[in-house]
Length: 79
Image (cartoon, rainbow, N blue to C red; front, side, top):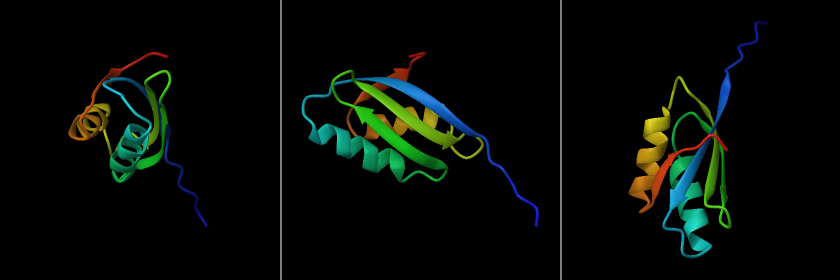
């Protein structure tokens, strides 16, 4: 039985506009629904979003677009 391994990429985004903890679940649900996204963690206090995803299925630009559709501005961050 052959095992296929999919490389998971961890993308970190910095977001703006968080005003309440409900923002967290809104973003996690929206981004988490994308095909290829394995995990989404939003850090409310630091305005960071960490996303584990298959980069062959969903691009960083698409992740940023989904955050924007949830009503927040995000950009890729090194930390």
